[in-house]
Length: 411
Ligand SMILES: [Zn+2]
Image (cartoon, helix red, strand yellow):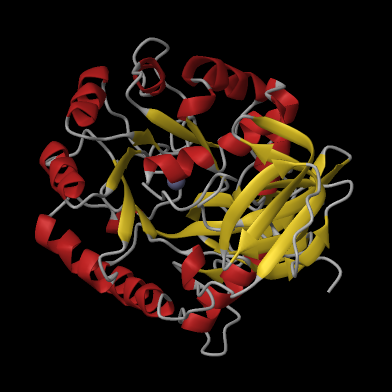
């Protein structure tokens, strides 16, 4: 996104910085970048003023796992696509998702393609790549996440990924996807136990791609070797896992135990019980956790009943649970965007706002070398949000990307 040639002063806010929350502070933005973060309300000649009274000012949220939003699915499973061209993903769909996420306070996200045919992955990666030419949205999309298709074939571990398209890695096949994506695949989720996984991980690392372990039933040894070979993250730990596992030997313990591995998890209040989130938080610590939404096309839609392709009905509840009709408490997918993860992790771990924001901004930025964002400090790109907390929920009032207001609740 092109930086605006402007001077903006956001004042009267509670500013969320890595060193603490400044009770009454201001952020001065010049030409799309943060110039000053300070206490008080200094005089700034010629600045456009934004009064943040009663609100927090924090870095824009970063979501590394977004499958879709508001009826758009990047992989076309789930909700029917409402784009003009019917069931094909389009550049305007990508724009719709990006603008929808701005309303949720998400200023950076990784469109995520999941296990599918090579043909569809090639096609949709090329569309995502084309969308990056759109100057109005490209600042919010540093790259893409490929979740699968090189994952476990076993039910439970495989999750909702279609068995027909799960496969073992072939480097040239992946390179075709990488090229179709304009070399913008920056995160890949793989299973460590599949044939050729370690060599594949090394080759991905040589391209600078972050490798995450997910949808797998790796042994402790396989997980260790995957990390030795460069895997740095676990994808939605505790999900993408069978319901019944061996109490001693299962993939969760070794991923929790290895300090070299960061973890991501879905903190929407439905995917994991509070005790599991508490243990994950205590074990890994705030530095090594990334909260993801893993949202599908049902996020951003009103509560109600929706028909899925096979004719079955699913229900989205008022509090954002997505389940088969009549099975409230069951899981169909995720429909809660990142602010819900922030408020829920605060509630179950009592980690405080500063730490919750770190797990949705600083940590994903650090892992992916997005050095221009994720922190409110001088020199960073002015990606920020203004929000209030009401009834334990984040209420996003304003979102700014590269110094430009892209969402305002009262407009
Ligand atoms: Zn998954």
